[in-house]
Amino acid sequence: MSTSILPIAGAREVWTELRRASHGHRLMIAAAIGLGLLSAGLGLLFPALLGALVDLIDDDAADLGTVVTITVAAVGATIAGAIGTAVTIVLAARAYQSILADLRERLVARAMGLPQGVVERAGTGDLLARAGDDVAQIADAAPRVVPALTSAGFTIVVTLGGMTALDWRYGAALAVTLPVYFLTLRWYLATAPPVYQAERSAMGVRAQHILESLRGRDTVLGFGLGERRHHTVIGASWAVVGHSLRARTVQNMFFGRLNFAEYLGMAGILTAGYLLISAGHSTIGAATTAMLFFLRLFGPINQLLMVVDVLQSALASLGRIVGVIAMPGPGRGDVSGPGAAGRAGQARQISGVADVVVRLRGVTFAYDGEHVLHGVDLSIGAGERLAIVGASGAGKTTLARVLAGIYVPATGSVQRPRNTAMITQESHVFAGTLRENLTLAAPQSSDGDIWTALEATGAAGLLELLPDGLDTALGAAGVELTSAQAQQLALARIMLVDPEMVIMDEATAEAGSSDAGVLDRAAQRVLDGRTGLVIAHRLSQAAACDRIVVMEQGRIAETGTHAELLAADGVYGRLWRASRSGSPAGTGT
Image (cartoon, rainbow, N blue to C red; front, side, top):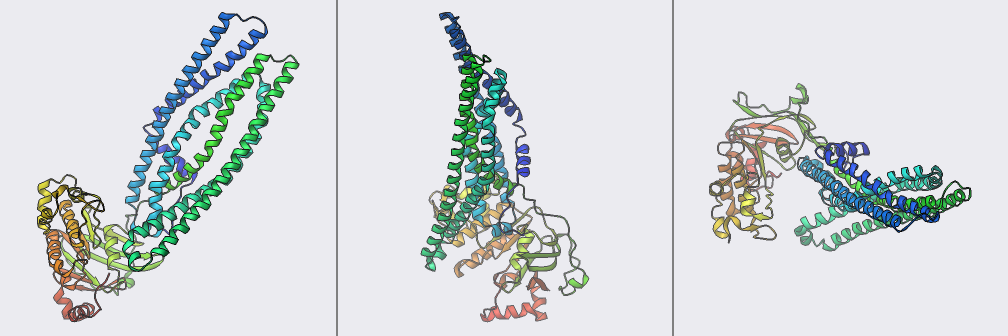
């Protein structure tokens, strides 16, 4: 993806996604529409009956029985209409929330499958804002949007029809307000969306700054950056305030135009009624009904137009959510790799490897246009342990992440076992119990399975240190584990998942000297019986593997066993001698 931010869906994409999400809820939506129209029709009976009563009284033809009958009928119709409207809103709200839940689930599922490089370039704050603030914005809009789009919308349609049926000239008098409403809505739809979009984007930037400050708290404190980060967050917050004030200004201007349309409509109905009654073309009762119709129409029109404000903000958030959902998945097809001339500089691969389970062909990868991998070809046999070494910036971690599916190659093809797991030097401990942390990716695991995994990784003693054993709460609200313990926890997770292939990206690099041996032995146990790719932090780890690949500047420079590479006295030989002598020419990431 070339852009630095996550995409925002257009109207067509949003509508397509809403139609897809409505599957399974369309019967409920149809019931809400039918009941809403019926309820709106019942609501017309009250003003119609009241107008008829006025004419009867004017003609001196109404007695007590007539008044009681009309009153009971009007009250009954009003109560029935109110009940129908309430049920309509409930049905519509259930459909609305069900569709929103479906969108939220698809957003989270898609976000979890995004290539890490895409998330890194966009910033996790933007993604969190879409999954949090934007979803909340749409959910919070429900109490205003649902009634407006159901009861108010149906009332407007049915009432306009009733007023025209009463006398087309009353409908014509009301038509003078339509240009005002039309121009007001047109102005608002042209002005409001970019304002709200800017407000939501500013919120995403603010969330990113807050998240970075919290995640990098130790660095912030260690370098004395607290005041600077504080001012950065304040600046981002004031940017949100500025956009919010602009949005409220647009909102107030919108409401002022609506008030003008209301007064104009009322004046039009009164004038039409006076002229029609004076000419003998209408009665006082009909004029009363027309005015009551308009007063009944007055509220729903304002409600519907006012909720456009909320709807625009919700639609802006919806566009951001659908933008993530509609992002294309990573391509898996083969792509032509570099030609023979481009591969000539590659070191030879071990030929004749039986049961090849991993194969990279002509893989390239770039960060923001700068290539990090250049036409990499690599094969790994079933059960083989392959180490990758090289100086800092050689492309080791990038290659591992491409193989794990975290990064999508620019060109080339990647073949790997479906059940592949990756562990890095940064192992996260989730808020929850030890059992929940261990069974995160293997929920079917029993306590016996957990014990076996902990024992295999040398972490069985951890249970004795925790007050509640497997039920001990971990994380910020519970027991904080050391880096070595967190790494043991991650290795035990791998054992429970039981993958066919394990990728270890300097998985024991964070261990102190006292923990290095324990974690190295645990890593070896995890690799037993599995295909393994090891990004080696220490060359002693690489020496224990079946084969070693040496990378330089995004290319494979050498391939062979530890003994073969030492005998060749090439790049690996220099790195090995440097590591033995304590030289800084080590194998950073």
